[in-house]
Length: 298
Image (tube, rainbow, N blue to C red; front, side, top):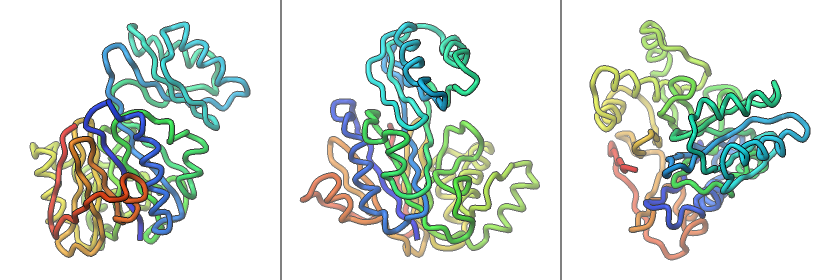
């Protein structure tokens, strides 16, 4: 048993609340998965505003990074967690030049993510642990989707935590609640095609399957529907790309997921109560049916 959930704001008008709301939703489903927590965050550049995530484990390095970023551009918003810095800067130069300048500060400092992209963050334990390192509640982008994991198929460790991607720095991330019973057969078949698996998690076949289908010409939505046909077992999963996100349920509809949508946002969760406590107390929610795929463009 795991829990999936998060929120997407349709405009930037209210997106300063995204991290805080996602935190509340994931905290509300903590009991469904206390082993580890992860989120996929979506960054979209706005004019010259650029998102930058930096790993920094050097004492005093955080201040040096922020000082340099302010010299290269103008820092509009920044958070400094335990070894991780996220900043939004007004910057008109080349992204490669910024990366080179930051990483020249110290061998222990590296740019983890930059520009329009998906940022995947994971931590052992609950969302409070993830927030302590990455300052999730201060995130001000428009989308944060995550998962609280209860390990069944693989080890309780960082590498098997979700979200999962098909490759490093992938533009597709998946958060899956359930169990894929034909996982070993699928893994073997995709390995023969040259796909690399980096975990023992049965969920990893989902992003690889989606990437494989799209490489053969399928649209994202078509690939999602194909996954329902090819995956055996009970599952509900959220998939996020650079352009859209989706909620997918198997033909048994055994794994819960509810949706709340207004003109302002789309919120998802494995538990309706976590939406009412985390977003709006009196909001209406609905549950997708068996074998349904719902896609939202960003």
